[in-house]
Each structure stands twice: as structure tokens, then as C-alpha cells.
Amino acid sequence: QVQLAESGGGLVQAGGSLRLSCTASGRTFSGYRMGWFRQAPGKEREFVADITWSRGNTMYRDSVQGRFTISRDIAKNVVTLQMNSLKPEDTAVYYCNARMMLGSSEYWGQGTQVTVSS
Image (cartoon, rainbow, N blue to C red; front, top):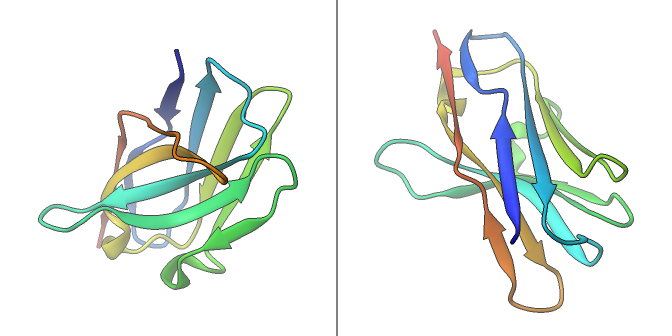
């Protein structure tokens, strides 16, 4: 059974930093993109960043480029999102996601709240 367990959310002032972690278990993730989505109240869930498990190729949404960094530790099965220079508009529930690059398998974590105060 695949599980994605997020940790690291919380409350921070604008300009501050948070580090989110996602511990993945239940299968090997070779051939997957591992990443983060977020959903603010009243808005649709949106892509934030992801990384290919095997090669470490990354993608970011434009609004977080240069502020957020995604990485993965293959030995520990952990994906990390380092978030710097946080803005109030980054406030959302952040979800860890794993999706097969060639196929339809996709998994989600339960989410972790990030709140940025102005």
C-alpha cells in the first residue's frame, strides 16, 4: 500500500522559510514524478513543483521559481520542498503527489497546512 506522509507545515511570517517533507513508502518510485500541489480556500488545487525520481529533473510554477527548491533523497524515500521568502499568497494546504510518467498511477498525501502572515 502506497503512503505519502507530509510534515513540516506551520505558521510563518512573510519573508520567512519553511521546509516540507514527504516520506514515501509502499513501492519503488522509479518512473515517477514526485512533487507538491497546493490548495488555498475557495481555489482549485494547483501545481507547485515536482522532480523526477530517477534523474532529479525539476519543474516549478512561475510564482515560486527562485524561492522554492524541491529535492529528493532516494535512499530515504523522502521528497523535500524548501520554501524561502514566503508570501501571504503561498498560504494553502500543501499535498505531496506521486504520479507515474508513463501510465495512470497517482497517489496523494493527506496534506499539511502552510500559513503565511503579513
